[in-house]
Each structure stands twice: as C-alpha cells, then as structure tokens.
Image (spheres, rainbow, N blue to C red):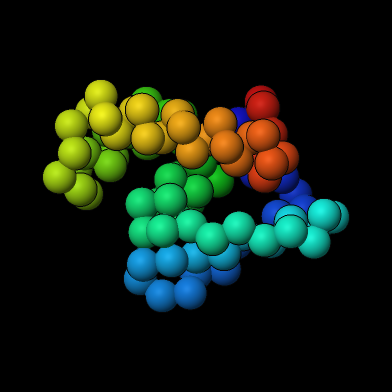
Length: 85
C-alpha cells in the first residue's frame, strides 16, 4: 500500500492528526493510534509490521492490534487515502 499523493497529514498534538484529501477537499481526523498506523503505512510498513509495532507501544495483543490496523487501513482505502501496491 502507499498513501495517495493528494493526501496531506498534519499532526495536531500528541493525540490527534488530520488527513486532508486535496482532490476531494474532504478531511478526516485520526486519534493517537490512528496517527501511528498512518505514519507507519506511509513509511511502507505492512499491516503485520504495524500491528507488531503497536503491541510494543500500547497495551494490546497482536491479534487485536492487527484487527484494528486492518479495519483502519480498509477505511482509509475506501476513502482513497491509501492506494494498493
């Protein structure tokens, strides 16, 4: 996966961030863990790699981390914020 080139990420503070899709003019808010998932996805990490990193940063087991990661990545893809490949 890769981020859509028309999407801009802006961190607001340690707990939130905003995604703005410049083509659609729609924006999306991300919580703290959503921001981490976005940042790691933007760096080219796989869902499994992201989930493993989340288990080290948060009190969550790998299965739950992978489920949350997959759900957010699916939502981001459905809004064309990330692209396959």
